Length: 220
Image (cartoon, rainbow, N blue to C red; front, side, top):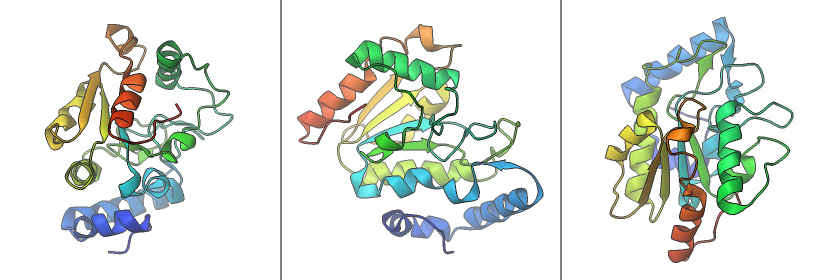
């Protein structure tokens, strides 16, 4: 199957794209876009991949679902386009960066600048119906993104995985912790951020690890 995705990912995931579950997933997603309102816009489904070729991945931040409100989701986990109000979890991410690194909260929530530095902003599910959280779960996306995580673990070296919340932390089973750094904390959601997301210092820890491996730090 031909998938409109960045060439290095197309090569790395070629066998996955040929599997029946992925063919079925594509059929489901196409039908959904044709019959109802789905986010993100179709051309932005694979934004995380298109901004961050596989050989440039330094950090993986795993989310669960895309935002399901108008104009929010654009294919990067936790990110919103300029001019869109910060969702609560993103607001808390910026609070932790300010506490950890002394960097003030930016004027906008578009994390494309992170993605272009090698931060792979992956949601476990890449599409969602408008105003229906979780509506595209268990349709094949999780099987696909699990394979993406395995592929990064197998083919890349010295990647930092930031796993926030119980859902993301289950994905640690897919990651070889002998060759990568896995950092875990509660989710940045207001429901759980005070249980240990605030004060986790994942952003400085990620940079210390990258520098120690001879890589350039992320400008968070």
